[in-house]
Length: 94
Image 1 (cartoon, rainbow, N blue to C red):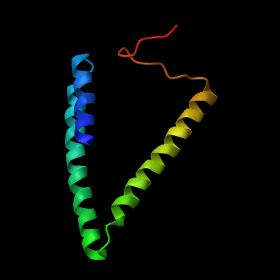
Image 2: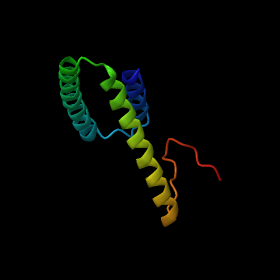
Image 3: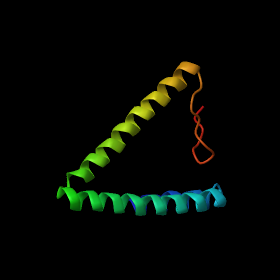
Image 4: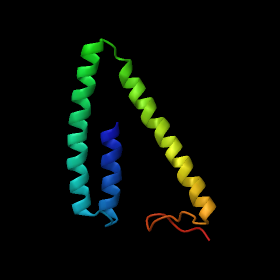
């Protein structure tokens, strides 16, 4: 599911000519090795502790931290008076 979503987003950037190839290549490398490390550590932890709940805990932690970070970013943006504008893919509403 995540692979399909990533592929669709990447394809959209390529079609609209907004993909920075050097940045994309670096993200692929970092993502691959981070996934490899995370999978290895999670597998070792689950084998040692004999519990599968660590997967749910890690997903909940990431979603929770993301929610807090997005809320903080929005609050700081509103406080400073900077409003997010859509990119060139989005149509501007006037």
